[in-house]
Image 1 (cartoon, rainbow, N blue to C red):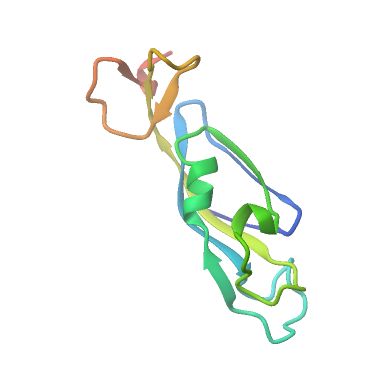
Image 2 (image 1 turned 90 degrees about the vertical axis):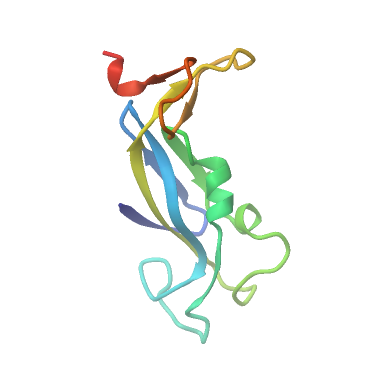
Length: 128
């Protein structure tokens, strides 16, 4: 499991090996603790929201992921902390071996971290 914290306006970047896919285990957006992104408390440390569903849409099942850490990416209209404070993203993710499934309507192969069960799928480790 890998963990990374990305400050406001930065980019969350993750890359897996050619035969692996990203799986987001946990993602929080807010001011979880004092760190490189939060130098002062201002009474707003510990406020955050779960954003694993957002990162799932951008990253899970892909080899690479690049997401800009901005309020509009992770919140709809309400911030989990005071609106004048910059928030940061904390992500826990892992790269897992995947299965390549070629879908006829797709222009390129679709990667899926599931069990090899269909004839149109190939275990990536079998490709040399």
